Length: 154
Image (cartoon, rainbow, N blue to C red; front, side, top):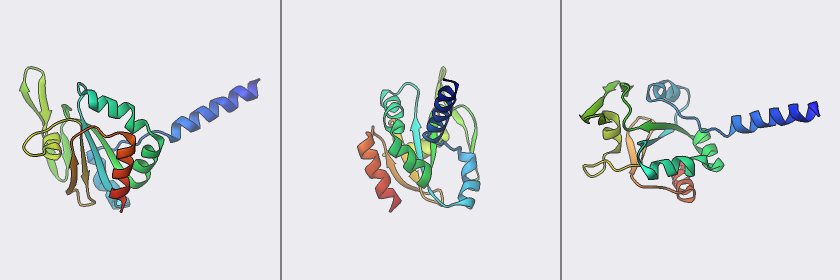
């Protein structure tokens, strides 16, 4: 019985340990790009956005998507209402209050603004030089997201 419990424990650790989506920080990207050049997938979201939460709980829990993002891309999970200052691409970005307890981060605006507005969720893909190559602001289910990742990998 003890052996079964130990085996179950270790299987649980290894299976959950390998299926986690690795989220990077903007600050870490420069050093990561020096090690291995990859495109960067930035998921810009808010806590109050229902479609953002749905993507987090479905699309980003899909094992194939997790595997593709972890192996072929650098993934950044970025809350557009983050209050922490972020240095990216040798530039400092800050939270910009727009009222009482509301605001948006400058970096979210820079990466997520499409046609003069930001609508959540936003997927922003950057090339190895941190240049925007794709912006998409809508919910993506697992099937559509897998297709997108395949096209980006080409």
